[in-house]
Length: 561
Image (tube, rainbow, N blue to C red; front, top):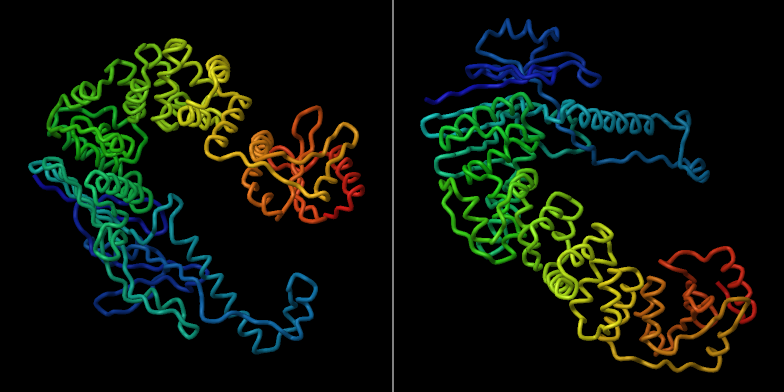
């Protein structure tokens, strides 16, 4: 049985009226600050006609076959002229460029008022183009067609299209609102054949699907899935009312239930975009959340093959078995809330963990899951397996989870530990296995990585450069002896001074560091007798005490800022 139903926007409201039959749309312009009189458009006479603004009375007069739909102006920013005011620019010299209206002559006043009117109208049209729910008022209705026999559901968002003309200073913006035509954007869900056809006019400028550039099929599928999801999300947000979406979703769930025999109650409770849920159900009816995982780059990047039939009711169990995922109650619960939990579980297993309690600990905590999903897998696997071998699963997991997600020292430290492992001394390895990737251990790894990638270069200084070395109070001003020490300074103060090695060798600048009680405090760049920069840890400005010491150092050596 094929059924077609309509939802038409009630002019001046956010509500939509549910109609069992198609109506002839009559564009209506409501009275506002820029529209002096209410009017409706007669297609038969090809002109606007005035009415008293009572939409219900107009509808009764037109008859049941017609439905008034509000037509709003498409916001078009004025261009073609810019108001100029230049009577000797006497007011602009004050600094703010303001002017007094009474100083304008007749011609200037005319230009000024015309431009102000156009911009006021543009801002009004921008505010008035969407309703309070964010739906474009140009989408005046929705047509829903569902077929119980063929298990298809088609959504058509009905909207106005104008004959737009090029804007110029001679044309008024009202010219954009004449000769309105009707058009539609469509989405067809075919549950039986597993197809979703999207025909949205804004989608294709050249007849091709935007964003799909990859040659490999799996990458192409990834980009297509992401683009379709974004298109459907925009369809939900900007074109269809919530009430209409609820009606559509209920009809779709009914059709999907006829195909699978599943009630899909868990999907009705979800707050995700209904059209996206419908997309996943159509593509993989018995396990729609798994479809999202299969099309994710996190899975595609693993280059693991998984063949499946969309009509297989056991596809989830087969996926877990194929990917060696422990199909536990905790996993299934976390998977329903976050499908990527399957990828997280695969990452944990590849890291060498086998204790189910450790799996559950990570899967049930979004912050911990983010660690296994966010750090590059290859170095994480290397460190995890090394730590498990040395200290066991529990201690290794505690090291990885220590400090939570988003720790730069941890993620960067794990990558350096794996990449430069053969250069890491046993004492530092032991410290890391005991304390984790503390700032000290991270900085030590940074020095090791720099020295592994670069040969040490001993710096030579002139007599004038050596004179910059000094001691003032508790502060010592010194020159770095080589590039390895330069790296050490940059690591300690969290800056990029290690990259200045070539500039020091070519005498383009001199780097001076100040230390107090043996700790690096300030990094200074000097060119001849000019101070280019003086910064402390994380490129912060010197403290009051440090500024005073620096000032005395400047005076002693004739340096200027």
